[in-house]
Length: 121
Image (cartoon, rainbow, N blue to C red):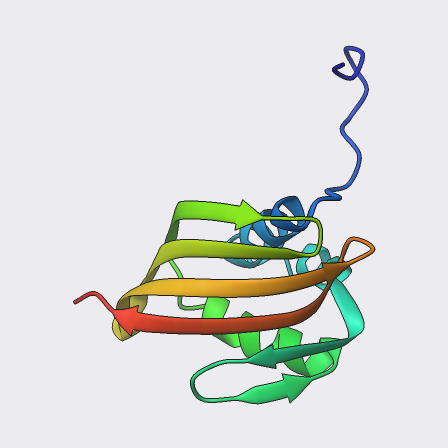
């Protein structure tokens, strides 16, 4: 059943919806919205860093997001606890990247994020 006309949808609940909304917020450089999807004790693991805590993770991702000019999602998969996104990023001087991003989600918040990427150019 759909929402009545004029009723805005609620916040994303399924992990894949949370992951997509988080990625969309980062791509839009909307740090406040992106932060709202992160658990206070979130962990992030990427090729060059391992971080813990909302502020540390958000700062790292915010710096990267500043270089992003386009994001194209190729696939978004998930179950009741996890999500995987595969997407291409145009990242300015860094170049084009293909990113595989795994998210663990609990109660609508990302508790762990692991990202790997490869250059496309």
